[in-house]
Length: 191
Image (cartoon, rainbow, N blue to C red; front, top):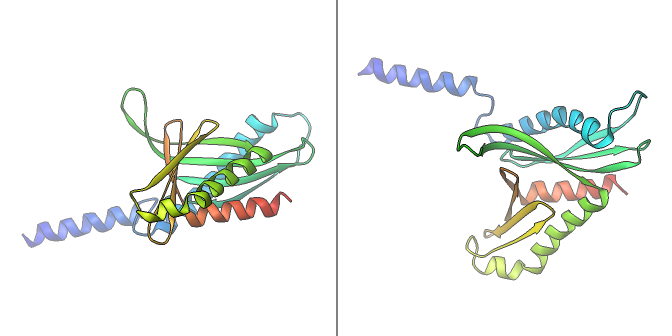
């Protein structure tokens, strides 16, 4: 019996030691997603938004904030020579394909500057305009809306609110702190 218990403890320790993201430390997921989002979004940006070029093109890309869950990371981009700037939403996590198989993956959604401002403001206005309703029955009262091909669901708890963003196969949680940090940093960097 002692050997089985010791084996079980050893197995648990080895799995938690070698895992990429320690679920007991939420900030690991956050930092992991920011690093991976920055790395992967560079290719997405120059291939899908700026376009390939035989000329040398300078651009900036800056991670703004990552959700504690690691499911959503926001990045600001700017390319003066192409006159393009905006917000990239990096989605990470598990999703089901059409065959019902669970996969881990990531994808990026581009919002050019004006659309990004409109999207962030729409979320903030929805929260502000429905604050009383949301807080009157925390966790039970919800609001939702669609923006472009993104569906947004919002609810509050006693002290905060939570945003879920649905896009394609992704269902990502965006907590209040990460949303506000993304909005504030985006507005500051794009002025």
